[in-house]
Image 1 (cartoon, rainbow, N blue to C red):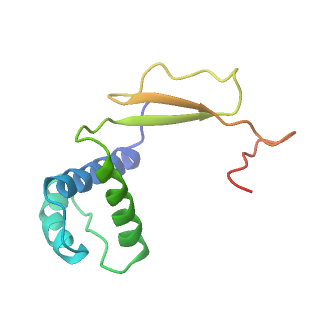
Image 2: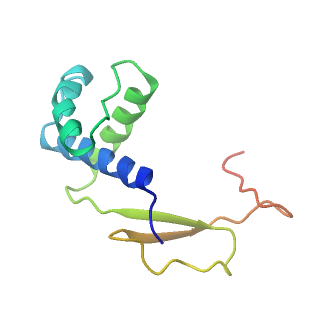
Length: 116
């Protein structure tokens, strides 16, 4: 299995955010954005951090804060969701660890219920 360029780009961007967040936890989003601009420019050209108060900034900040509780190691993971036991699993995906999850579809459909 091979990731598309856009998927690799998103992954690279999130890794940069997480590494910088862990290097020096920010006192506020505005200071973090100031630090991230040159990092993103160097590693993910064309990408700029979301402005303070936007939904993307709030969501990204929430995820980064949640990850504070987990060790310093960063492991690249591909979550492979499958609808049946018969689905063939990818043997490799570049340098990612593959984690599989069986998502049983609603009876008679290909849809998976996420929440009630």
